[in-house]
Amino acid sequence: MDNFGTGNAGRSWAPVARYALLGTTACVAVAAGAAAILFHGQADGIFWRAVIGAGVVAGVVAAPLLALIANERRKFGALKSEISRLSSVDALTSVLNGGVFASLIDAFRSSSAGSSRRQGALLVVDIDDFRAINARFGHAWGDEVLKIVAGAIKSSVRTGDLVGRIGGEEFGVFLPGASKENAERVAERIRGSISDTILEPGGRNCPLTVSVGAVLFEDQLEFDEMFRKADGRLSEAKARGRNRVEFVQVSGNGDERSTLNA
Image (tube, one colour):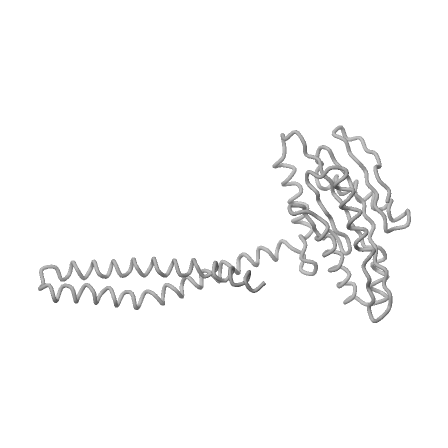
């Protein structure tokens, strides 16, 4: 961890040093050149003292000033990056916020237009009895549950998959390119890892489970349509007892069929 931080710090300061060095070199060259023009024709001793002196003074003045300017630019750039990151993620769970999540899915659909295969899946993961958890243990523990579930989901997906918080206790998982088997495996891994979580606020047992509704697609739909279908399967999972996975598969021609009950 320390090595990683040191490497990042070195990379963040490298542009500052480069900017200051190049800028100082340019200032020294300009000052020395101006002195050479002004003192042209003077005795060699006077000429070179003037040229060297102008360069030294320019370097002494320019180096710290340019370093300060470059550092302020670095901090401003870092601040802009952090603001951009924070505007894209849910502050509590550090997954994508709902708007960004939906927009990225629709952007994926647009970018893959014309490709031969756009299969994948959208999972909607909802915490079972979340209101009861808040009522029994308090909102601080409710927030902790949201973080636990978000962490379990993130640890269950691949790099490149999208995870977002799309409602109070509801999360979305987009699995671009996933096969039926891959998507079912991910959904069950999420459900199982959360149901295996031991949560004991104040020494009291707090069972934690999620229900998952999902749509498998062969030709990607718009986000709103995919969400509607996945949410319908989520309602089915709730009606059948919670802590389960319900899928619907949508073929290229729009036909639907249920594929998995876990």
